[in-house]
Amino acid sequence: MEWFSDADYWLGRLLFQRGLAVVYFVAFLSVAAQFRGLIGERGLLPASAFVARVRFVNAPSVFHLHCSDRFLAAVIWTGVALSAALAAGAGDAVPLWASILMWLATWAAYLSIVNVGQTWFAYMWESLLAETGFLAIFLGNADVAPPILVLWLLRWLLFRLEVGAGLIKLRGDSCWRDLTCLYYHHETQPMPGPLSWFFHHLPKPVHRVEAAANHLAQLLAPFALFAPQPAASAAAVFMIVTQLWLIASGNFAWLNWLAVVLALSVLGTGATSRTLGLPAAHHFSSPPTWYEGLVMAAAVLLVALSYWPARNLVSRRQIMNASFNPLHLVNTYGAFGSIGRARYEIVVEGTDDREIGATTVWKEYAFKGKPGDVRYRPSQIAPYHLRLDWQMWFAAISPAYAEPWFPRLLAALLDNNTEVLRLIGTNPFREDPPTYVRARLYRYRFTEWRDLRATGAWWHRTLLGDYVPPVALPGRTTAPRH
Image (spheres, rainbow, N blue to C red):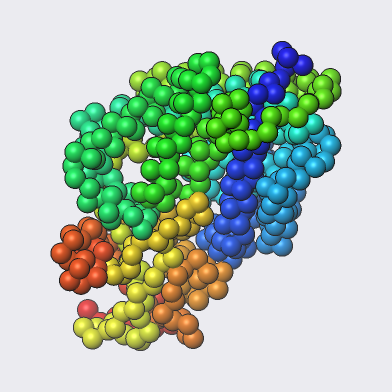
């Protein structure tokens, strides 16, 4: 047992498993509330059309067996129930084999969603949750001490997450090297939070300290994860502090929370238990032979798959947020290799006028999280994730990110598609759909202190022009006047 497991990490495992289950719970809930409008039968990118053209081997998913809104809902709500049970400690209340099956079913359910989620599920926190969830399958429960191989693989994952993000910054935008990126980032990030305005207005020397601390957390501290205790725990705590800073400054889905959860697995029980006054670990039974074999087989597989992301880390042509296999195991990560200097937003409007002229009244659709009304203070969304709002930020950067879903979004608004409208915060056409919709591109800037006090506005916005000119469904209107 001594060569296979280490009882000193029972607390780190406990915190990791409970935290991961909570992240799973939030992730499944966010899908439950949004899937019909995104990938449902009347959604913007239906999963049924995707599985009809993509082979199972390229996107493994239970939805290749059957794909309907009812079946999607069944799988999603099963994931909600399993993750809630695991968060409540059910994994420790059942035999080891049953605990493994619970974690396996939760992972398989979420992976199945990610692999048919297309654009909406193409971001790093989805792959990170899939990879982390796979490792959790083999971590055991209260019957056995945590297996050393899985503990080291968790550190390897945290190392790649942090170092990958750090290297992509150094190799990318020059503002990371001269420590000026935070002059812009809090204003131009995809989904500002309620404190982002205040972070943006911190003095520039503080922004430079932020950037320097980011480099320490992502390029130096990760190497200490492989050092003896208490150095490894100290590095993990430093990473947790920097992640909490990121959580306070913006909305990045569950990315930062999952990084915190991974760091918790590094904490050694000895010093932590004494500091918190926790009891020592109870006696663990010897792990079954079948369990030892399962863990070792998984470890061999993951070490072999680590070749590609390890090579990517040292490559001058480093790519970020890529999966080298359809199961999203041992991925490469990175974030904000370039920082925008200006913020652009798409504002969608509609009118019920039959003809468009100088007196046409346009009414604005409000989204649930992204900036729109200049007096609307940015909301705290994370760890919940608003997928349409997030993708709108990318669409504002380039129309290439808007295909093929954005034209379908406009068509859904013209049709008052109830599934899609649930993704929108405020629909100004509750009774009858608009006759025309259009999309306009604005530049947004945070206001200054005096403007906020005088007007209550958090943003200034400047119209740049039409993103999509007025469009209508065929046969519903007369031709617009020019």
